[in-house]
Length: 99
Image 1 (cartoon, rainbow, N blue to C red):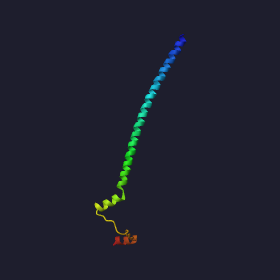
Image 2: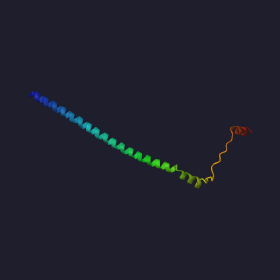
Image 3: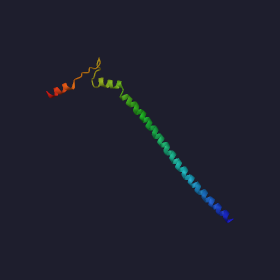
Image 4: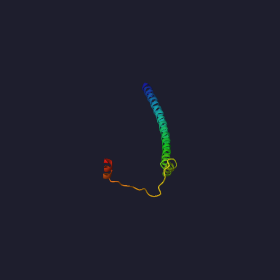
C-alpha cells in the first residue's frame, strides 16, 4: 500500500509540474502571437505609407507638373524647335583661356 501512495504522489507531482510547464508555454505562445499581430499591423501601416509616398513621388516628378512650374513660376518657355547643340573643341577653349 505504501508503494501505491508513493507512486500516486509521484504521479501527482509530475502531473502538477506538467500542468505548470504547459501553462507557462501557453502564456509564452499568447505573448508571441500578440507580438506577431503588432508587427503585422506595423508592416501594413508601413506598406500603406510606402504606397502613399510612391504616389506622391510620381506626382512630384511628373513631366506635366515640372513644365507647369517652369513656365508659370520660373518664367521659362518651351522652345518651338529642337535644341541647338554647339560643340567647341577643347583646344579652342584652352586658347581662349590663355588669352
